[in-house]
Amino acid sequence: MGIAYLQFKLAWRLFRKPPSGLSEVESERVQCVARRQADLEQQVLNTMEAAGVVVPDRVVQEHFAQIRSRYAVGDEFHADLADNGLDEAMVHDALYRELRVEAVIEKVAARTPPASLVDAELYYRAHPASFDRPEARRLSHVLVTYDTAAERVTACKVLSHVRSQALSSARFGEAALQYSHCPTAMQAGSLGTVRRGQLFPDIEAVAFALAQDQLSDIVESPVGLHVVRCDEILPWGPVPFDEVAPRIVAALTERRRESNCRAWLRSLSACDAAEVAEVP
Image (cartoon, rainbow, N blue to C red):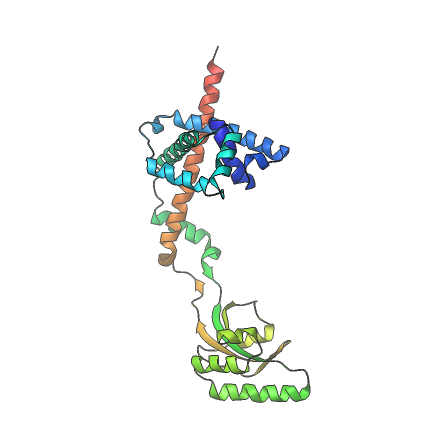
């Protein structure tokens, strides 16, 4: 029954389809993985850590409902169970076993001491690039395109008017909606958060030289003429340790939990191998 349920579950997890829809190759893979998982689950449940571990029926029912929800109608669900030698009661029992295994592994993980601030600071100093914010700004622009020399003259006049009248963020947004030929006109000309390397070089050089709330002179790119507004200069450079310390501690602790669980699971297989070797 345990193997049948695992095959049923793994068919969905690995291939997003019921066991009856698997190809021969897919079915062989599911069977192989199911056998290995069943052996591992039994090893976990045979440990002293599993003693006293129970799973509330409410939790089992929630997971059963998730499986049931994959089917449009109940008849398909029950037919698929029957095709795999299962019924609802057997699935409930298998789910209880599976969730109990997960609870035991979580119990083992919970024994892991949390990382300390000292651990976090050592990691922070050893990986400076991971905590270096790139230079970034929130920018808006008005773009006017042209095809002829006369249209270019008109574009310059329009943008000169924008520069003289649209000094505030709100007025600039109105000007973008009225004059800009860029789709961003519908978002008040907003380019969003922009980092170096994301704009045309001439636009980038101008945009990253602006003070906050400052408008650029008219600048040309391959697509037309622009006036750029710097809406905000975002913090950049090394992120202070105090700002990222909780995140580093959490990540290091989770990494240790996973490492300890893997080591514990490997030890179960090693113990089984040793017991087999001792049999006369």
